[in-house]
Length: 158
Image 1 (cartoon, rainbow, N blue to C red):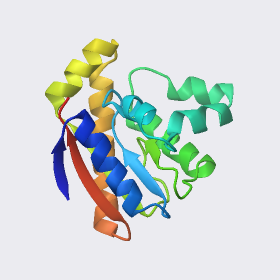
Image 2 (image 1 turned 60 degrees about the vertical axis):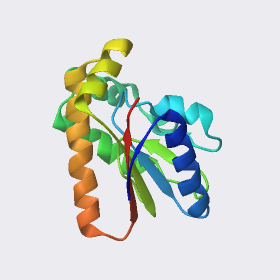
Image 3 (image 1 turned 90 degrees about the vertical axis):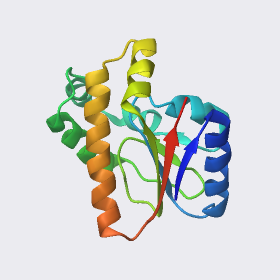
Image 4 (image 1 turned 135 degrees about the vertical axis):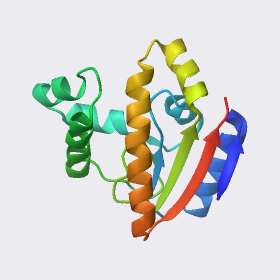
């Protein structure tokens, strides 16, 4: 299912998907600066990966994953940490940059132009966000090829 949505439409679509899969484990996958935190604040019972992961990191792990620029090596390290430390709970969708063990995955895609605009507003690196986006898309495609999950694709337009 591919849907292009405004913010309110995204919230409504996510709520409908969450209701349909209320007893399943859901990952909402999106790059940094896509609007995950904004959505999280407006939808109850959702979990932010950062809120779950950061309290569990050692100072060395935190220092490594916050290096700039973002690289695939950092991404692979984060993947390993997340797979070891994080689990998705039914009824509590996880907003994340990494697909962990779950039943349904929702990908919130964003155009490069809009991503660049969001990065400028947040004073974040577009290059880093774009690199993360490419890594997410590789992960998304690999999981879709493997199957075993339900996949939803939403395009964020604001």
